[in-house]
Length: 576
Image (cartoon, rainbow, N blue to C red; front, side, top):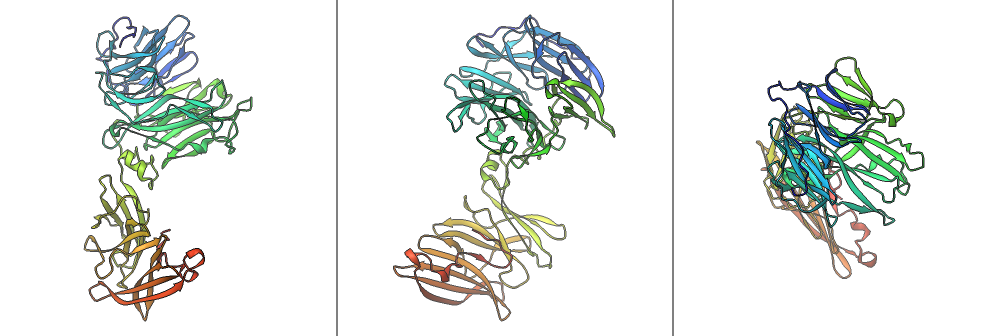
C-alpha cells in the first residue's frame, strides 16, 4: 500500500521447533509480557517502560504478537511459545496487528492522513514484510482482528463517515461482511462515535469463521458516557448480528449518565460466548455499578452470571482455564489463576490483559446456538439456522402418553415437524403442505376426531380476516392433512368478518364446528358448520346453520359473537 513504511529486516522464527503445548496463554502487566504453558513460564519479555497493545495469537498457538510503544520507537514484538525466542522490529507506523492463520501476521499502518495500508509478515520465512495488495476504499481509520483459515476481519471508516467490514486474506483477496453504523445519536442529539477494540474468534459447524466483535460508542467532548456493544460478524454469510446488552446498564434510569464497557469477550469450552463488563455511573467518582462482572449470551440477550469484577477468562486447548479477578482497586490490575485440577494455581497479580489461542480448532454446532432468540426468524435467517415456528403437546401416536411436536422452518423455506415421543423415540417428519412466510409462531394439538390421537394444528398462511390453519394427523411415520369436507379453516377477525373453530362433544361424539360472522349494513350473519369423523377418520359435514344478530355500536361485533374469533379446543393455546 502506498504510504506504508516498510519494516526493517527479515522476520522469521525457527520452524524446526516442536508445536506448542495446547495449554499456552499470555498475560501482560505494567512491566512484562509473559508466555505461559500451564503454570510454567515459557518466556518473559520486559516492557522496559513501553506500553503494550493487544496480544494476538496465531491460530496454531505457536506465536504471540503485540505492539510495544516506548520513548524511543514503536516496535512489533513476537514471542515463540515453543522455544521462547523473541523478535522485535521497529515499526513507527504500525497501528494494529492480527494473525491470519498459522504463520502470517497482518499489520495495519497509519500515516498523517490516517490508515495507510496493510503489511504481511511471514513468521516461518526469512523474507522482508510485504504490502498486502488489497483493493480497499480510502479509509480514515481501520481496525483488524485475528481470524482463522488465513484471514482477518477489517473494520474501517471511509472519508464520508461510512463503515465497512471486510474479510481480508494475505494475498489481498477481500469480501464484504455485512454492514454497521459508525455513529449514533442520543435523545439530546449528541453524536456518539463507534470504536471496535477486540474480537473473539470461533469456528462454526461448517468450518466458517465467526467473530464476536467488542466495541462501544463514546460520547463527545470528553464525557464519561460510554455505551458498550457486542455483535457477531459472519463472513461466510456476509452478515452481522447485534446482541442485546441493554441489561448491563448500571442504573435503570435511561437519562442518567453512565458508562458501560466490555473489557473482553471469549468463547468457553462449551462454545458459549462470555463477556467481562465494567459498568459505572458518571458521578465524578466513577462508582462501579452492580451490573459489572461476567455475562453470558443467552439467545441473543446477555445475562449476568457473576458480579465479580474481571478482565475475563480464557479456555485453553488442554481443557483448563485461566481466570482473572480483581481483589482490590481495579486500576491496579487483576489476579490471575489457572484452574486445572481440584485447586486453582495463582499465576500472577497486577495483570492488565490476557490472551490465548482459540480454544477449539474444529467447528462446533454450538457456536451459533445462543446467537438468536429461537422465535426470531430474521436473526436466524442471518446466521443460516433453522428456526422454531411453534410447538405443541399431544398424544400423536395414541399410546396414552403426551408427545411433543415442534414445527421447524429451514432456510430453504421447507417446513418439518420434530416429534419427540414419550418413550424416548424421536423423528423428523416433513409437512405435506406449503407454509407461507410471516405466519404466527404458534401450534396446537387436540383430538379432533375422538380416536385417541391428537391432530396437529399449524398456521399455513394469512388472509385479511385471519390465519389459515392446517389440520394434520400422524400415522405410519407421516403427517398428512386431515381429509374430508373441511379444508383450510380461517381463524381471526377483520373489518367485516370474524371466524374461529370450536371443539365440542355431544352424546359421546367428538365434533368440530367452524363459526363465521359476516356483517351487512345492519346485522351480522353467523354461519356455523359442524363436522364429525366418519369411520375412515374423514371430517364430514353434519350440520350447516345460519343466525342473524344486530350489529353492535358503530357497526362492531355484537356481544353475542365476541367468542367467535380464535381456536377454542381443549389444551390448545390462544392464537391471538
